[in-house]
Length: 98
Image (cartoon, rainbow, N blue to C red; front, side, top):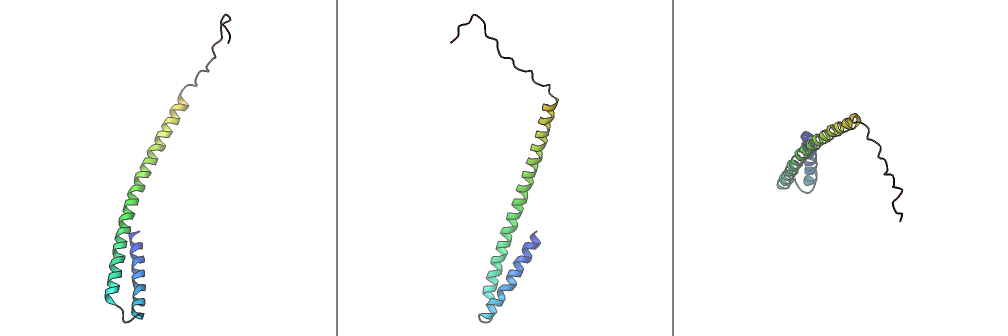
């Protein structure tokens, strides 16, 4: 993935000198500045990519843990005996009605 980002940065860098040459001889300082900017951007993107990979791995682990936990809970519920029906209390014949 980092190689792809480097390729994109290099393609952009190679396109920029054409503009500089057309404007009057190819300002080397401008090209170097732009290349440095692209390198910083690439480094930042690489760092962000690594952070996202780590976050993705953590989320994947949490998901797998939750799936295993849910599977165990369902298994316990399926193995448990069925609950007894709850009977309603029968009112006494001598109790006052409201």
